[in-house]
Image 1 (cartoon, rainbow, N blue to C red):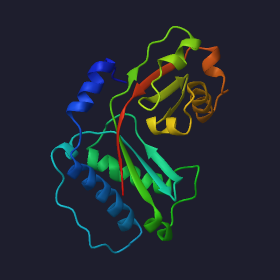
Image 2: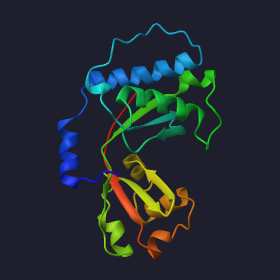
Image 3: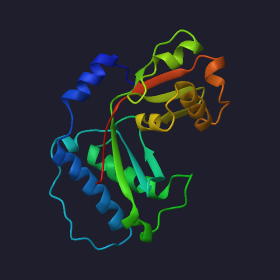
Image 4: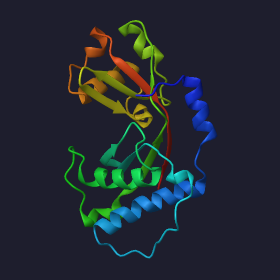
Length: 201
């Protein structure tokens, strides 16, 4: 995993933000990906993507219905063009999130699509387990915990539901399928990242 200083990482995000038109393009591309998979006729079509959308990018795509999570899958590191990453993870969120049954054609019109474009993760340095919660920035940092071969992440949006850092870390350990108190007992590999988040109206 490539490591950058926090200040450099955030400055890079500020200088490389998507335009409103590019955000709308990605959301339309995600919507069309779902509709095409389920053979739903659409009058929408898209021109070729802008150069920025053809550059490598890492995203998570989140699907909700009536405010309830229906699927969320993505990647932490860029390995393909941003536009292709969005398309791939739109379908994965719809069909491969183990927490939910696959999306159905009847649900597609009900789904709201949210895209999170990630910065490169950076290692968070800390010196004791008790220090870790104080180093996390609520509502700003996405967090990756890694222990042995296990790894799990929460997007920054999860802070809305888990605003207490200790509870945030407990739940993230549970997502990693380990003791929720593991972060209190041992030093973990911790990485943070930020996101540029946008969603359908």
